[in-house]
Picture 1 (cartoon, rainbow, N blue to C red):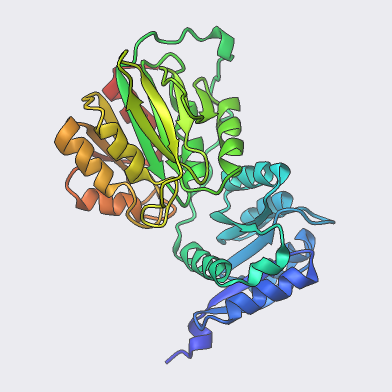
Picture 2: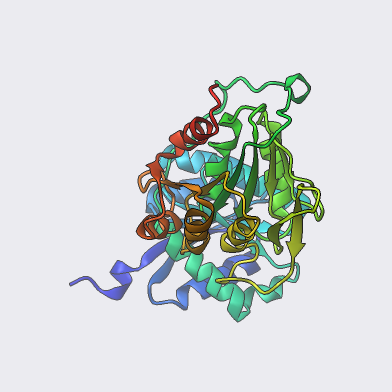
Length: 356
């Protein structure tokens, strides 16, 4: 029988800071199911060691000398099929780099606290350990290129004047890359508005919105308090805020942001958004559950189906990085269509009756 050490998840820790390499290694080695097999001080060092050691998971700092994290990630994924977790600071530049890394194939990311000594607190320790375990179980899905898509300039698109459908999307681990393969495929003149909850810390959702906006015909923005929901727009819930929908006396739909307690450990939570949307009484709703760990969104889609007669889409297992949220969604019996990641945009446009 194999020993615990032989069965343990083998991790390569990459960071230019000796202190961070030690802290992360100590955190991971404190769990019997994980073993740090080596560390690397820059991207070049990481690529060489990864080819030699073939780790199960790599934790990779974003900003490093010699070879930065983004370049290293691309090199790693060329050489070996390994799940990579990025480590990023809470800076605007760090957030932008992280979104690019997730697009390029990183499974997820861990934020470094402003005070690096807080890296060793119990909450952060648990996050690091759990994310390494999730990464190890994840499916590496090839990044789809958008280079062959014709993205019209925003000023060339005539936006629809009416909202025929509201599309509510919930996603978590693997979501940024998955959204990258859905949102740019939607026509800019679609008579639908999109609401997205992506589990993410503050700051990172704005970078995600700006990146998606730059490669989409749709107008993508981080949701703000009081935003009037319009067709052809995508509203992404800001990190650490629940996103709710309110129907005004004039019949407009507006976004409300809330700091009410996390639901299921999440703020924003998919369930909060979908249940709020359900409470408007609208019957023109499409619910979409995509890749992610856990069960967030399953209660929301049941409400959309039972009360609002909504149409529910779930991403299929093969194209998910983590088949958690869609799996539980399917188990509710509320899902109308299970489709591949590439098929989600097509399914949405079919229901909205838009042909690109």
